[in-house]
Amino acid sequence: MIINTYLTFFINNIVIIRYTVNKHNSKSKGIRIKEKWQNILETNKEIVWKNIFSNIYSSTNERKLRRFQYKFIHRILPFNRYFLTWNLSQTSLCDFCEYRKETVDNLFWDCHITQTLWNNLDVFLKPNALRLTLNLKTISLGIAENIPNRNILIFLIVLMKTFMLKTKI
Ligand SMILES: [Zn+2]
Image (cartoon, rainbow, N blue to C red; front, side, top):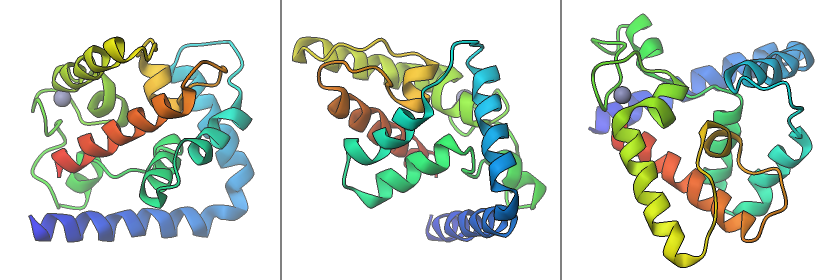
């Protein structure tokens, strides 16, 4: 467990260093990330990126959560696919279901075990008058629109995702 945590920390930092080294490319990388999300979410509707990034700061003061969401949006979180490449894992499959390939989208949304967790959050939200349609877009990028309790909802989503990543480790 401790070794796993250490390795995750180490690999996290390698990814960050690689990202920093490539920062002269950051403009084109930023555009690529935006296009990637546009494709993943299968939408032609323009994503309001200014709001997506300000959400990170308005929803929580917790640095770990902010950092997590920033990495999530930039798709630089480490997964079994990378661990396998570096011989740090025996598999590229999802740690939860051990069935599908582990990717950002599978681990945090598509996986049936993850879906159970999101359903539990949905059950929690309704009696507390917190209205939100959970889908890949809202759980990935937060909520761009101005809806009641927006910051609390984004905070809960990010907290849930960090819990998922911790549980995986
Ligand atoms: Zn899975």
